[in-house]
Length: 498
Figure 1 (spheres, rainbow, N blue to C red):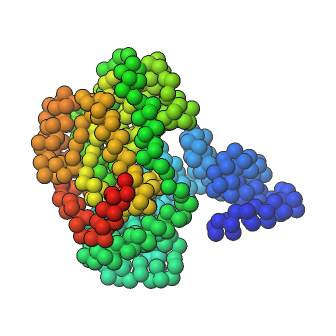
Figure 2: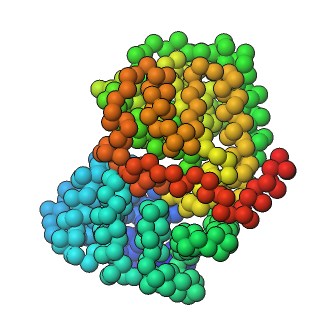
Figure 3: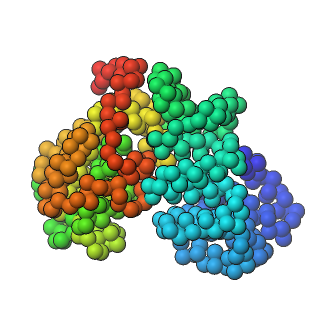
């Protein structure tokens, strides 16, 4: 019942059994697992600790508790539990796999990789470890090794939708006819994770230049995902007007923080799939810039200081409050500017908060990545995101979001004309060195050759573009939308409604 997500039924049965067998440690453990899956962490901890007190030798409950602390980001507590369980089970693949997951959550990639390798050495057919090794290699840019691990996992269990999508998400992978047959058979069998299969099929149909069929599968995939989310479309254009009503020209003139620092955060913002990962990879190849990837601090600080009411929560803000935000941000990010005084924060959705960012930190710079409207919308629509960007699964809401992003960035540029650098994705592809020099000049930095050889820079990248930015520049993604005639028609119709 738990595996089939029938949590209420399972919980009722377990509560009845608990009355009958109060000393059975497995019952509170399973209750804890249910609450863990429901993200009710406090009651989950209570049940799991109850199980642990009944049976302190249970490997299962120790791993469940460690998972709970991982989700809560209480990493020290989780590691202490693993120290206990590894002493008792040093050669257990499940323990190694779960410890790898903990390290992965902490972004301690080398240690995570070692744990997964240990698991595979103990149990060569451990599919979870093989699959995760595939993802780690992808993030490191070792695409061939990534494919090798995914293939090993599929050789053991060929019916795994998430792996087929992972292969498709490498962008350059070509499916064999036998793999296409398996994907088609799973779709016909209404297999689990149907959405991943639909996105995957759309991907290989595009590679086969069957664009009309590919678009039909894209529409099915996005429609199913949007329905699964039970999402109600957000009023993006209204949101933009609310932001403008708070961050007026006068408000921004009188509320610039007086924060004094020699640290320069560079915020890379824009639509997903607009080239932000590529820009960060280029900049992080410079000796004086640290690439910190996607940080969550700005959204968290905006939420906290604005009392979870952005933008209206900022209406009565003062210079001192923006000063506090600036100080808090630099304190939270100190590990990223300990050596280099310039670092990148590539959280594309920070375009919502450009006013708060620039008012709180006088040294901050914004790089706005832009891309052809049709290409960037299509690229988002073709992407099954790991998390977030729920709006993108409805073409109508995606278009509204794009229009809002375009409008609000034009507004920010009118308020802060010297602090926002606009970079066109297409110009990077066709004039790489010239555009890099342009960016570096605006950051008061000298040209360095490694920036042009960004694909040789070793760092872990977790976004959908990971496989692409570890390769040399290619232009095949330009004007891809021209192949999708029905898509162009729909976007043009939506344009008339705005």
